[in-house]
Length: 257
Ligand SMILES: [Zn+2]
Picture 1 (cartoon, protein in one colour):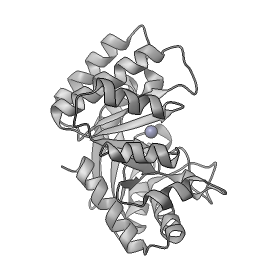
Picture 2 (tube, helix red, strand yellow):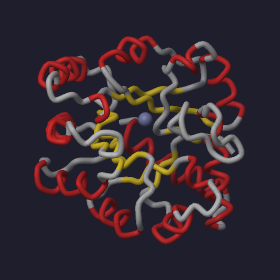
Picture 3 (tube, rainbow, N blue to C red):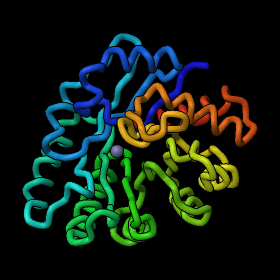
């Protein structure tokens, strides 16, 4: 089986960078042929820009400001830097962006502003977004409906919500990013995916974080995407080929325009 696309992986992160070529080769060995790299903050811009694909491996890069890197004091100037980057037209989407109220609620207003602003850039430039929402999925859905121009496309990355939330996201024409959590013991996410199906699902590792079973707790890498796809194939009783085909078609529609 070939052709898996990892729609969310930080291959440019320091812990993965030194093994960059080996990791990409292991990806190809496991049938993972492409990856989407979302930016995090201003410090990672240089790393993401200089990251290079080996022959046969395809890479798309997203630019955006991660919600946990949004600071009320510097939001205006930070967004200016991001806007200038996106304006250079070397990116294939905007991310990762969103709202994270798990670690820190003190910058919520600034996070909302950064999220809405970057979503609107995406609509204006016809780019897809990669959304990070933690303790804030309903809020993100609400903001998109009320404050973002119509026509936003993209993915709720690392989706772990309910069937109801999944349907709200799908009704907006957006996608669910399913990662390693789906392989964990007793993951209710498996049943959520089973009830909504794969039509609006893409796969991701979020490496180096969130390694799937049996690597849980260790450094994650994009080649493990095969384990995630295999797990979903088994649980939904859909042949792996079909799982790969549907998820990759979705991923390519979003970020490989
Ligand atoms: Zn991420």
